[in-house]
Length: 241
Image (cartoon, rainbow, N blue to C red; front, side):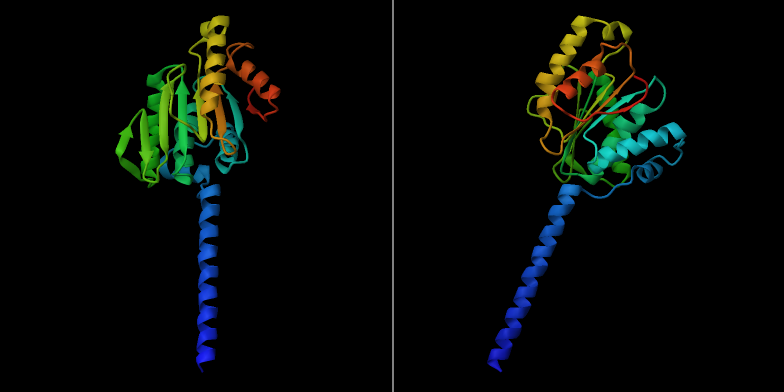
């Protein structure tokens, strides 16, 4: 009888250990892959009146690949007033942090004010979808999730020391054609990208999304493509060359 009880106890203990291992494995997989977020459903939830035209569906499809970790370099070349910033710089970071609340998103634009505007909207969408904010970190230039992740915003060329990003979004790094056609401005921008922003990217899971109106063949996108080819990175492109 004692032998049988001992055997039953050992079997239950082993089963308990297997259960603990299974739970830990599932937790690790969830942290690696994140909570599954379908971007178009997320958009309908936080922006019920959003109009899904064919062009936007194409962009959303590519942004979903970034969200799922299947694409780590995405360039959106789209003319002004097509809604690219709404999708890529406001809705995408909110969905990304809902999927990965322990990770960080960085947003940069030609002005800190514009980047902070994207951050504010992303924070609102994140909260609207049920995301929990860190009560002590809710500023527009840097806000945190309850799980230790968050979002920071900075102007192109600005200081981002001590910050990192699993998803880095660069939205309109140049203001106009004049800046895009200035060799000095492009050299300065490229130097900031390679020596500052790029070094903030988290290894292995880091992704970069660039959104820009194409002003010149020698603008940032032209330089990015050259840089990425030099280091054998993959770049997905939407829009005319």
